[in-house]
Image 1 (cartoon, rainbow, N blue to C red):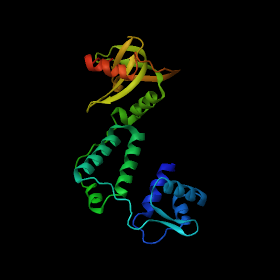
Image 2 (spheres, helix red, strand yellow):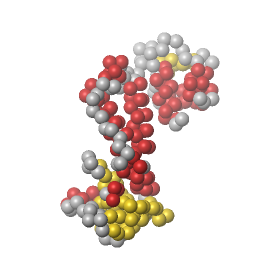
Image 3 (spheres, rainbow, N blue to C red):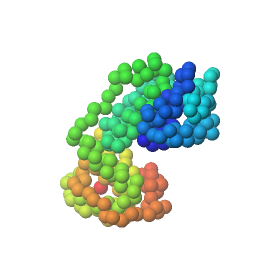
Image 4 (cartoon, helix red, strand yellow):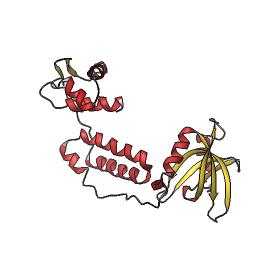
Amino acid sequence: MRRADRLFLIIHALRGRRSALPARSLAETLGVSLRTVYRDVADLQLSGVPIEGEAGVGYMLRKGSDIPPLMFNADELEALVVGTRFVRAFGGERLGRSATAALLKIEAVLPPELRERSGRTRIFAPTLSARAEANRLVEQLHAAIEAQAVLRLDYRDDRQAASAREVEPLCLAFWGGSWTLGAWCRLRRDFRNFRPDRIVEFATTGEIFADDPARGFTAYLRAMDVASETVG
């Protein structure tokens, strides 16, 4: 478990308690040592979280200073729920898991009436196996963007003309029905947008490209703002 998650869960476990919670109970719940609990609580106290207590006695939030729940109205909460569903459907497995975990953390500190509302929204984003994000392609392209990994593409354009490209991937954009990969194309010596569903095969070359103001992400955004969309 990440430390940030532990700190969140410690605060959540202490919310609304009328008696001290033993450190040993926290340690068992979190699956960590007593020493880790003591250190985490001390760090929270230093950060200004109003936790009272000590090792061997237990901990509780100072009376009258409970941390308030997140203040979302019903429409804001529905937007978060719907957004999470869209990320799960279109963002790939890794981002989908993270979006679900984030929503669970938010719901954990919501008032009961809003927590119930979060499950009643009727806007859905079904996951379909034929889409590019379902076969992990979008997730793999995202990883290449983060790693600044040069990619070799076997690509088919809208006329089914084949080409082999080496590209420096810069971003992914979702247009409601399809994705595009924004990249610097070494063959065309210019920015291009590639449809993932037209990528027949791709592989990393082992090369890492450097940030270059002339062909990096900021330059790509400028080019897309003044140029018409070019796919492939």
